[in-house]
Image (cartoon, rainbow, N blue to C red; front, top):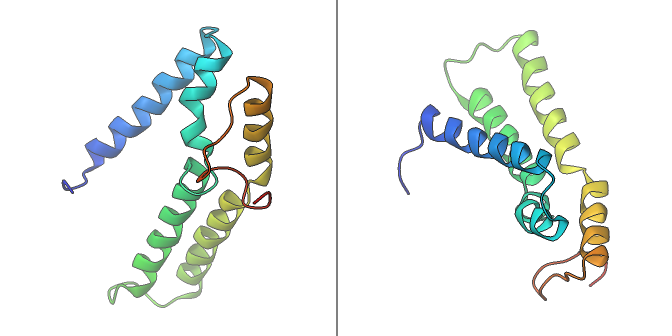
Length: 118
């Protein structure tokens, strides 16, 4: 895996901004769904990945020996973990993805789909 840098992460966010701009341009809904679908996947989608990233950041801050052991730092770590939990708890996005698949005749492969429907 190549080394991550702030620039590689900026490229990622720029790609997401490009997708948003593209979707504002009135694309075909089936094509739009195909582009957005990976972002909403219940296992690897953006809410899950960002939640995992925030939890990992909280752990990195907490476990670093140079981090002060103070109430404000403890609160910051708690806030990161709370934000992670809120992001991961986006069940409505998963249901919206299922509804879009139904609307446009796309169905998930056997490895995808709703974990509650299996």
